[in-house]
Length: 116
Image 1 (spheres, rainbow, N blue to C red):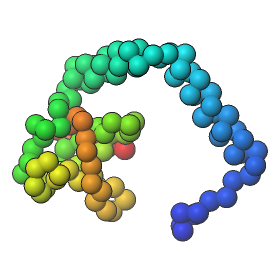
Image 2 (cartoon, helix red, strand yellow):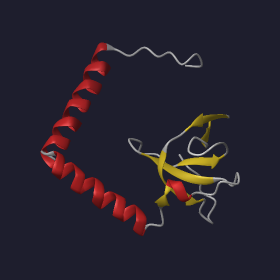
Image 3 (cartoon, rainbow, N blue to C red):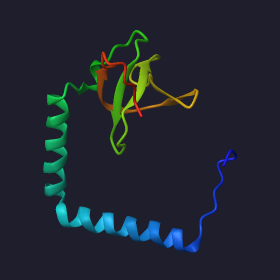
Image 4 (cartoon, one colour):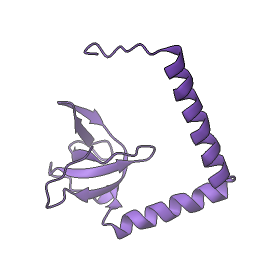
């Protein structure tokens, strides 16, 4: 809704909660220990490097737009850096700017596809 409110039925709420519980159980099965989770995180980090992502601290600091990944987010976001180090990352979304703390960055691809 335009005012950002939304009402769901009890059945929809139960389905959402069941899906969240199932996802949590699947994560626990796939990564039962911290060491298992760290291994998976390291594998993902290495793979993202192979795909051209680099540490956020090396992003352009001249206002050039680029893309970022934040820890805990599954999105790729359009961003630029402006401000005093290390607090100058800004994600552009929905006609506004939001502060960011990305872990990885890359140039905007030549195909023009921007973040989600």
